[in-house]
Amino acid sequence: MAKQFDALSNDHRQFIAAQHLYFCGTAADEGRVNISPKGMDSLRVLGPNRIIWRNLTGSGNETAAHLAQINRMTLMWCGFEKRPMIMRAYGSARTLHPRDPDFAELNAHFPPSAGARQIYDMEVEMVQTSCGYAIPYYDHVGPRDTLETWAENKGIEGIESHWRERNQLSIDGLPTHITGDA
Image (cartoon, rainbow, N blue to C red; front, side, top):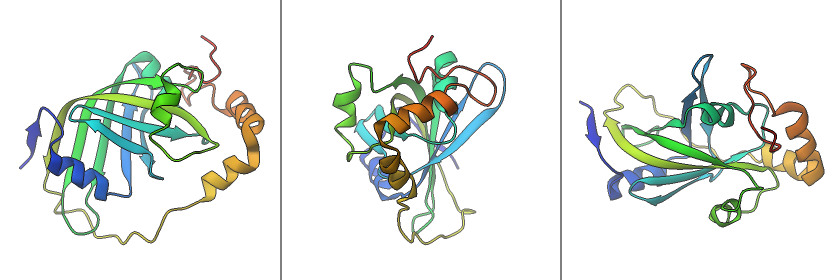
């Protein structure tokens, strides 16, 4: 049976800290719903109703495009190892780019990364847990370093070029504002 909460409890925070993977869901007014898997030590719980997560440069940029229209966000974690549980955090989020004043302060919560593209600052409005009894067991083998190595090899100029060439529009043609263009 699902249970709902107004904020993240200490138990919820411990569950989040134990997971190696989470998912982010967003949608615009029209078009496709996006669900992205995330990892790489990219999430921090800053309080009972605040989560930040850092988005690294990649092939798409759907979350930024969706949040430019509607600031809704859902984060989801699954207990793949010992504890069976599914947990979702529902809320609203704002997008911070490296050019934004708050970016450096929030980025300091994470290890250095050449590919840091955005930080999402989420206000958690509701937390829901459910049993997770149908989630299979998976063993975490370890993190991948492929994306970080790619970003380091590209360098800042290469990353910014990638943003201009591949990250300015969502798959539905919505602007992501990655380069500061309106």
